[in-house]
Amino acid sequence: MGSLRGFYASMVGKKVVMGITGLIGIGFVVMHSLGNLLVFRGPAAINAYSHFLKSTGELLWGLRIVLIVAVILHVIAAVQLTTQSRAARPIAYAKQEHQVATVASRTMRWGGALLLVFIVLHILHFTTGTIRPAGAFSSEDVYANIVTSFRIWWVTLFYVVAMLSLGLHLFHGAWSSVRSIGARLPSPEPLHHRISLVVALLVWAAFTAVPIAVITGIVR
Ligand code: HEM
Image (cartoon, rainbow, N blue to C red; front, side, top):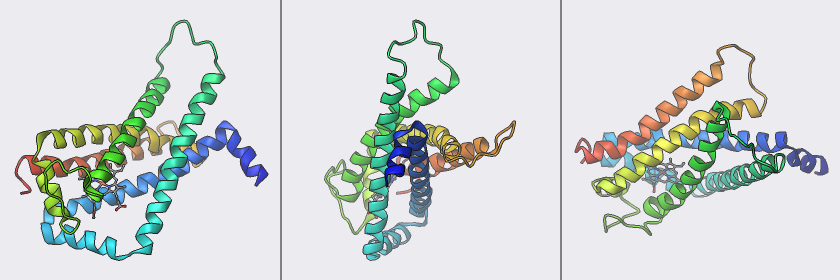
């Protein structure tokens, strides 16, 4: 236990935690974005999928707990890594040279914070129905919730912007999580870099397709 704590205290330990929890998040968004595509098969398909997930009871709660713990650990490790690296350089550079790495890590922090806000609003919107931009909400009819919500231009805009931020976060994050857990293969043209790009693009496209299809009337 003590050695585990000692490992976490190091920067490498925190990066490993960020990598593992990040990969859990990637697994979730891949499954979630594929599930959302059922909207193109009509109300029966996506509503049946939603009912099935809710009928699994303990399994669904088990997955929710894993996800919640992963998100909390991911955020804590990110905040601690930021403070640890700032403490390592108490006096800022007189002139900041924006290297590719610093631009990536800055967008990771801001993009990550935006995603956290998105996730909270999103659950209040589609899972609990606390926020009802379209007025009505039915936990039995996910299809209707999606269609009535994304007919509202600002709801669609909010989701489209959030998904851009998710795409960027996935691109930088998927690449560095593999590196952080030490699974990287040395290569001049890293394969995991290209895989991250493909995963980020596919997840971004699958998520973004739904609000765009509703607002353009393809899904009604
Ligand atoms: C355009 C993009 C998205 C759409 C249309 C969408 C749609 C939905 C819908 C309809 C539900 C409710 C499902 C049900 O009650 O059966 C839901 C739940 C959820 N979504 Fe999304 N989602 C999107 C993006 C995301 C993203 C990017 C994340 C996370 C990074 C996310 C995380 C969640 C979570 C955590 C739940 C709650 C699952 C549960 O515990 O029941 N969603 N989403």
